[in-house]
Image 1 (spheres, rainbow, N blue to C red):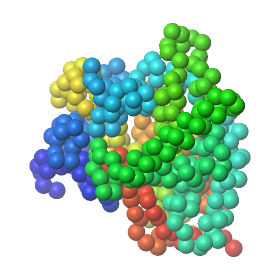
Image 2: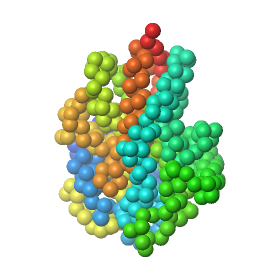
Image 3: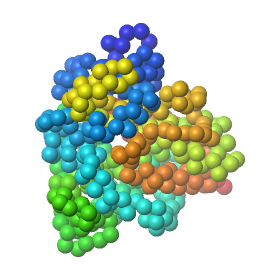
Image 4: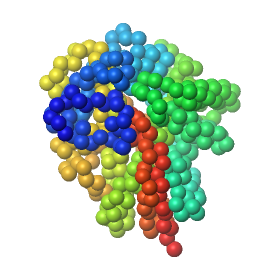
Length: 416
């Protein structure tokens, strides 16, 4: 790669069409781990932003929520965790992941019991049953689309269980999520008819589901929010209808999309590293460390944005109040100063302090559920199949936000 940095454009979605551009980010980590990205023709809002590519600066920013806001800069009309500004009071400041403390923590506390160790233990048997059923159906096909036939299914079912979505409606969630995540034919900050229709359909469905739960009750996450904030939250405002709807929308996408990509890309990594597959088969106790390595290696969420609320120095650079700051988890997870032989896939890697789930106050609410889903899928894959092979290219969504897999043709070889 040329030594110059000014040719790099992280808002050019074609740069990510074949997967995460590791060479570009390795160059950034070497030359400028805290780098100002000038606006280009593709950059939303026509505003530049800071790029944090090294593990150390990413950790410094994510550990300082008082300086780096998930909502917005001082007095701004927009903000959030995407490069493009989203309107404050509609997305930023309302979506749980685009909300600052103390309200962010209050809402998290309200729904956390749904993903507590005790709650996950109650879900595990049902999720394992579904995993076995999903893989049995895929095995009947011999050659399947592993993304659609396997990787999508379990996270979709788990998310629907958390939200209390009826069985017959669950695949609508996947369709709406895919349309929202796919940037084919559009640039960052733009919409198209498919994305707009999906967003409208999800909003209509979510509103009706919330009203149903308001009258009928239940023990899912939406019902927990409907019951209200903890008693010590006064005088905080009660959970609004918009916050409820945005929470539903967030879980549709974030609750299933990231895990399905980790499952798909995890199998790809094992197929492409047969020695690691053999090591895992020889020692199933390595599965927990293998799950962590799959999360690091796949890095399902590529970046999140923050906004500086005051002037600060980071990595020798002066960041001004109001500046957009992007934290590239997928780059930090391959920083050789933290991860030995970082580009290698190692199911026994230890320690493995990856940032696939973020860190501190915005650490992924569903991290342990995602880990359980990955463990269940790979336990049953290794138990029931003697081999797997890719039989075509992996197709990806055109996006710089997620490690989005669209299709993954795989031939399965069941045991026996």
